Image (cartoon, rainbow over all chains, first blue to last red; front, side, top):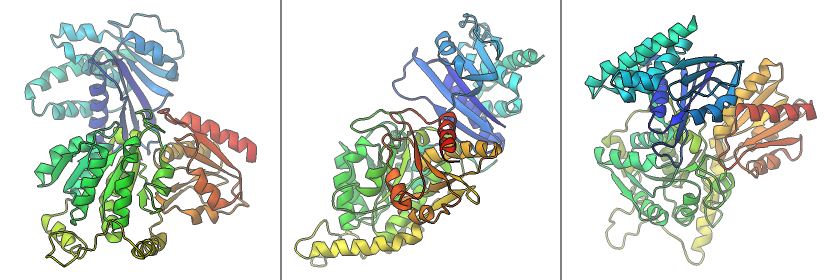
Length: 182
Length: 359
């Protein structure tokens, strides 16, 4: 089974960090094949940023796919740019604080989470990406949740103060993701 | 898995080179390979090596020429249009038989080209990386793990042959991250031994009158001697041809692809097999020396068509395929360029068109 995941949003929303955390944690804690591929070129805060993660129990071909199992959109322009790349039956994860346009497809499962607002409410504005990763893992179970928690601990090894708030943010997201499964 | 490290292709190349004993790097920035010099800038001081950001590509390749001629393991990297500027220096190293290693993380072309990934430098890499008709072993990795393994080995090949070696990769492999297992770090003692074994050739301060072997060109009959010696070396490379045959036992449709295109083709071949189509792939791992025999010896009663998959327009490896099979079966091209990545769907569509035409 191969999952092709694309994450997209504004530069500064932590899209690359979200993808890299998912991929690196998967590489470290599982035997699965995994790739991370960032878009590159002229990038800036407020511009667009996107990346691809592929997770598979077999060798991975292209690290980039326009036929996605999962699409995570953190802003409006990304929704319009990439929604057609989701396979029928695929999943669409939306940052519903700022993505308010109607979804013009009825053959994908839409999971909404107001992650920008949640991060502000938690007093940790930058954690919107970690909350969204929680939503994603809670809903898809693409990897066990412990894999990401270990990944967060590893990522913030040198800034241990940041571990607890980020694990909290991840768990908040997990709850939403799990609830959406039902 | 404990010994897996999740690394970017470019950084994995730089770490592999360091572990292989590379102690000198000179280069000039260019996307998409900047993490290689960046990594070396940090890493070389840690191992007692030297990192130089040259004032240009021309300066960098000539520093590499100088460093490698002392018997130290030295390398450089650049991308496509930057590599063009290396031509003179690489040709001089080939003439002087200098064991230097360099990496081309390909982007678009010709000219300055798109900064996005491409495989647009095949002919340059395999046929004419500079003037004078010299040849090199050119390794073409298809995974980040192969980027590591081939960079590590490139130094051994360069020193064995006393000739430049090129690792030809692209912006996808350079930029993507994948789990790798890193090779062991060569110890200072090992490196000293390797350098001592090269003393007969190196310019390391010989006493006056005792000439070093290194020769940046010759006059009179010397030139022809240099050319003849080079040809003798190239003739030994039959043993170095490396090729992967994937699902080829009964294949009727044969994909020909190297590097990034090969890993995409592999996924498509598995899908085709699931549909009952007998597809397989021949993947040149060394694109120089090219595995002509593998293609030439195909059973053309069985093989009905070849799909040449390249991220280059026009097709370039096609020349080697045509030379190898001499029209024995149809060849169809599946190409993208200018930063447009081949996807599984595009390759699948091209494969299905070929199947319709020949099966």
